[in-house]
Each structure stands twice: as C-alpha cells, then as structure tokens.
Picture 1 (cartoon, helix red, strand yellow):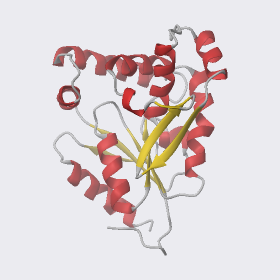
Picture 2 (picture 1 turned 120 degrees about the vertical axis):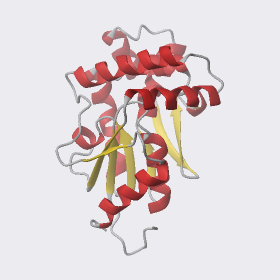
Picture 3 (picture 1 turned 90 degrees about the vertical axis):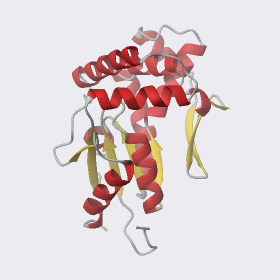
Picture 4 (picture 1 turned 135 degrees about the vertical axis):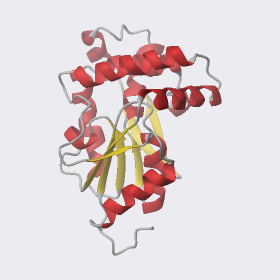
Length: 228
C-alpha cells in the first residue's frame, strides 16, 4: 500500500512502552505509506547523551535546564533515516548505548525537558505525511492526529526483544537486568505527572506479543485506509 499523490497525507502516531515494537513497526509503516518516520525517543536520548558527555547531573532539573539553554538540537531526514544533531555533531550512532538509554528515562520524566522538546516535535507534523512514535505522541504532541495507535506487549516478550537487540548491537547485559530496567521504565513512564504513558482515548490498541511486524503493520493499514 503506497500513498499516491492524490492521497491525503496523515499524521499517524504510535505510542507504547519499551520493547513493544514501536520503532520497527513505525519504520515499516512509514515505508509502506511513503511517509516520514519520526523517532521522538531519539530526541530524549540526545538530551541524555549531552548530559552524559558533559558530566551533567541528570537527576538535577536545574542542571538539565541550564544544559538545554546551551544545547543546539535538531533533526534532519536523510534517506528516510532520522539523523539527530547535537551542537553540530551527528550523535545518531550513540543514542542506543545502554547508559544513554538509562539516563534518557530519567530526563524524559522532567517537565522542563518535555516542554522544551514539544515544539521541536510538533514542527514535523505541520505538513502531514508522518509516522511519529513515542510515549505521548497521541495524547500530548499530536492530540489531533488523524490516526492513533497504542502498541503493547507482555513484559516477557518485551524483555526478550530488548535482550536480542542488545546482543545484536554488541552490548552486554542479561535478561533479568533488562527485565528490571523495562519494569522500572514502565513505572516511571506511567506515573509521571506530565504526559504519562497511557493510550489516547481514540487510539487503536494492538497487542504485539504474538504478532510479527508484518501482521501489526497490516492491522494498522486496515485502520488507516478509512482515513485516506
């Protein structure tokens, strides 16, 4: 299913917890539709990366606010790939480092960070033709999105997926540690005061535990077809 020149270009959001398959699914869906894929999690990871390399106390909201005031962050799309640029440096390759991931879950809970990144994300939705994935895309960033999805999976499945991704990327860690990290991340995401992780009221909820990426994308395309 490819979007034609006459097809209305939609804003599509995919939210969900860590390991539910959001990134892989969003990329595949964007490719099918000929849309831009926006990995909003990379923006939070970029802040985490900057805090890490500058040795900023990432638990100190004042220190993070000062960091943001001095930080130049933008995203460019290159061959359907989102490149994240911090202070003129392409940091895309560093954003999946386990330590950056750990720090990102802390800074992402800070209202100051979420407010600072909100307009950066919203600019991408102005012309439509975008698949944006994250944790508050359909509830806060694009509340008027044309189609919203919430992708979930059971904790065991998500742990296995993240463990396999970690091994393929050459990182260490064991499944029990990863399980605990995901569980802790779920708790932080679901309990934060600003934009907690919840499905939008009008989101289509899909459990990907026993589904392949192709099956999830096919399910999404069925919902999207009614809006094209």
